[in-house]
Structures are given as C-alpha cells and as structure tokens.
Amino acid sequence: MHELSMANSIVETVLEEAKKRNASSVIEVAVVVGEFSMLGLEQLRFSYRVLTEDTPLANSKLRIKREDGKVRCGGCGFEGPIQFKQKQEYHLVFPTLECPRCGEAVEMVAGRGCYVKSIKLRARESSPNP
Amino acid sequence: MPIGVNSLARLVKHDEGEIFDIELEKNILKANDELASKNRELLTRHGVKAIDIMGSIGSGKTSLIEHLAQRLKERRRIAVINGDLTTTIDADRVSRHGVEVIQINTGKECHLDANLVAKALDNIDLGKLDLILIENVGNLICPGEFRLGADKRLVVISVTEGPYMVLKHPFIFMEADVVVVNKLDLSEAMGVRFEDLQADVKKINPKTRVVGTSCRKNVGVEKVIEALQI
Picture 1: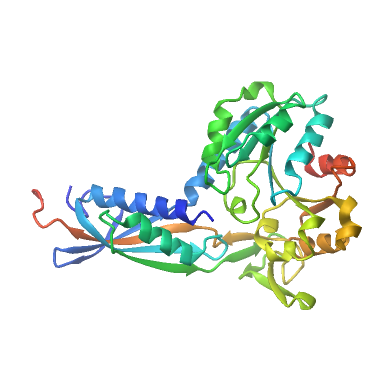
Picture 2: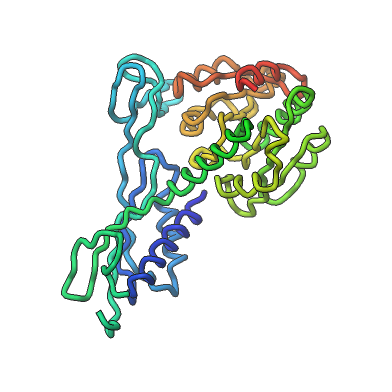
C-alpha cells in the first residue's frame, strides 16, 4: 500500500541526480527490491508511471530486480535462503524464521531493502563548458 | 555541472558523449532505518522505553493501550503516540486515562515511519517520561517494513479475524517480539482457538511470545506487561 510513497522517493532521488548532472532526460532507472520488502511490483510500476508524467523521467524505463533474501542463525551459524513451511489443511505455504538446522530463530540479513541501483541519463545537447 | 564530473557516484559507461550509465546504490528504505536508529538513540539517552504497537484494524490496539495506561500510570510516566489516518477518536479515548497523548495524522499513508515519530518526539519532554506507547496505523502489511526506533514491536490480532489470518500475513509476525491475541471471550462463538493461532505464530517466528487477552473482560493485560518487560 505504500508503493506510491516509495515510487515518489525513487523519482525524487533520480530527479535530484539528473539535475545535479545537468541531464535533459532520464532514459532508464534500475531499482532493486528485496524479497522481504512488502512492495507490490505492479503497483510500484503503476505509481512510477503516474508520477513521472511531465517530468524529465517521462517515458523512462523502470527496471526492477528482485534481491533474494538471506537469513543467518545466531545459534548454529546457518546461512542461506529463508525456509518455507506448509499447512496442509489450508493448502498454504508460508515463510518461517525457524532455523532448518537447529530450530532456533534466524535473523533476516539481506533482502529488506529497496534501492535505486543505477540510472541512464541523456546529456543536454548544448552542454556548458566542460 | 556536466554529467559524471566531480561526483561521488561511480561513472560506469559513457556512450558516445550522449547517454550515461550512473551507478547510484541509493537505498530508499535505509533512510528510514537510519532515522529509526536516531530515534532509538534519543530515547535511550533519556532512559525512555518505546513500544511499537501494530495490528489489524479493530483488533483492539487502542483498547489494549487504554488498559496498559490505566495499570501502569501509577508506576511509570507514560506518553502515547497515536497514528491514525484522519480522526482523533483513538487519541481522545486514550487521553481520558490521564496520560499525555500526541496525535499523528498520516493522511493517506498506511503506516507510521521513523520521520513522523521523530517529529512527535520533538513535541514531547522526554526527560519527564519512562515509557512511550506508539499506536501504529491499523494494517498488517506496511507497518512491518518501517522500523520506528522502538525497543519492542507488538502485534495485536483477535480471534474475530478468523483462523487463517496469521499464516496469511507472515511478515509482520517475523517482525514481532510479542503477539497479543485479543477478544478471547469471543473465541467459542467464532470457532477460533487461541492455541491454534499461537501455534501458527510460533511456526513463523519461534522466538515471539504470544499472549491471549480479552480487553473487554480485562483478562491477560498483566501478562502483556510482563512479556513486554515494561
């Protein structure tokens, strides 16, 4: 539900950078979204499209890459992807913080972020002095 | 300044003087985490404990806060930060118990964030407090993502939300130190057992403590205080 505000932060970050570098427009924005973040990618794309209208980012391509989550166990040192369990009667699969090796609770160490990884800018045709 | 000059960011590729690839690595969510750490430092410096109270709409977050305020106000100096979209209904309810209440209206935002809490903390005399209860916006999805700088995170749910609700929202329970299952007085009528919801929470997060309450019948509130160590 907070995709609009996240998209807004992404657009602001890119606009600031584009202005600083005297770019005429933004061609592409690459964003990384962690597995454990609650962002819906479809809603993020939609918000981005709406927010970039009439800005130097208009018609730019938004590339979204999923970042895999990683967990670490303080008990036994296990490190790896988050584990999933099943509840047969509800036909449901859900993630768990239970360590697959020792049963202690693991910590999420990667996959919580959302960041602007890179951008592609077009320079102004008549650049001021180099 | 022309593209790629005097910049901290790394210039990766330069395409015929026209198009530039720039590596940024600007973390959007990290900005919130950094502010949350600052809130935490500020609170710690003043010896104030804060609890982030998240949970579904109508699960009993405000009722629980009313009970906590009523029971703790003789031994702790308490303030409540109330996050709500537009109304002051919750803030009005809590202030009747004689504790300081600061309202944050988030407008259209579905969660509190560290920045909003930092602004609320600016309006509080932290030197005169021991405990801050922060009531987040009723929502089982977004608040989990935004840490506020609280010592503990509490999630309030209730049996009236049905038997599947825990497993359908696993991420918020991963963030929880304590989970309260409220409205146990309606358990039989709903056909939803505390033990089943507790088992579901434990399957997702083995280190979380699960406490059953009935705020309406004033049952279980002491156990919540004990679990939160407040």
